[in-house]
Image (tube, rainbow, N blue to C red; front, side, top):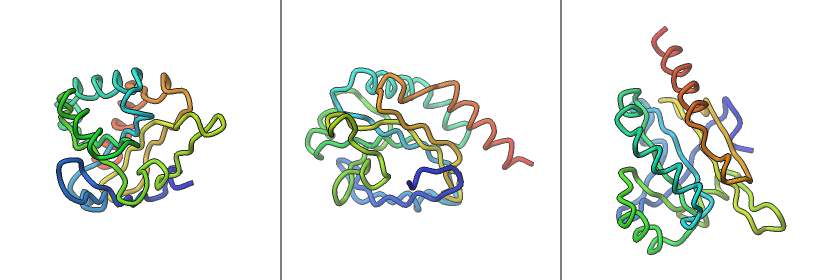
Length: 157
């Protein structure tokens, strides 16, 4: 599974309302947190995105760029981003879904898309990964903060 700590994650994505987005483009310039939503209609996932948006300045100060990956088509994702005022790049997979490309599965007889997040350092290496089939457990603010603190402490040393 490509989301193991210490592995690299190279996703070929398309930013809604924009062009191609490659995670490798952030190497050397920014740490990246990719939040994988279960679905645009997922209340818990939307709450997580609102929390991340409220943390935008704090995350930017820590050198972390947030990207939100959604499994829907571009038109739906574009409308959702505009309606919700999401301040981060929202991406879909170039070929299939970003979720499938990253190894996030559809569980419970294919009915539930896994969601969660992955933190990449400036070298593109996975430093934190939390994936859940339960969307209520897909984002943990304290766990991400601890992972960022560990990451920034290790790069400062």
